[in-house]
Length: 222
Image (tube, rainbow, N blue to C red):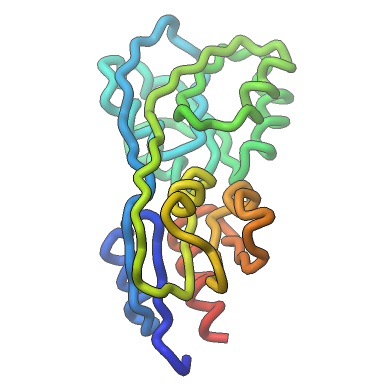
């Protein structure tokens, strides 16, 4: 690399993740452009299958008074990191897919007789609820965390932008612009939020922060 690449991560990285970028010779700016607030909730019914699409939903569930009961119920989820967090906390995971669109038909085909409870954020997509209702599967949903904008003006000139959600992109754009930077996105849903804004997009092979970082490093090491 001829010049020092400046990378902006729109969420704070852990020390190992940040070190990957520093070791590659990048300068790193990081800030949480999204504020997550966990929402207390009370279960109306005990389900036979739990559904998660994010790690934040799992973290919120861990604070619930019924957590020990819930740990006895199998789960299906979106994202390898969500699966990992569930397993680390004692849950049995029956299915995992990287995208909700891929998990939806599996639920429709294999779990028609289940009573499913979906733990989600306030900005969740309709893919899974619509698919479950279409299959006439028993279904309840709880909003267990709130996702709010925490926009920050970045005055330093950046070369690469790391995005991890559509809402993170919206928050970034409230006080900043995307010009010639290359945008590295955690998945296709996040990348879709950049439609009409930029074509300089690289999508991670896996929906993990680490893979977004790897894509960024590989892009500039070419």
